[in-house]
Length: 33
Image (cartoon, rainbow, N blue to C red):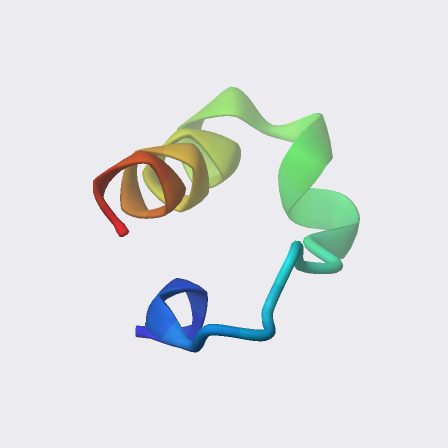
């Protein structure tokens, strides 16, 4: 949802980037936006 906003170029994912199981859905959402 947030990645669909026209002026959003990225996100701060914090600790999620350290855990593949948490980070993978974020990447998937970004790719489909």
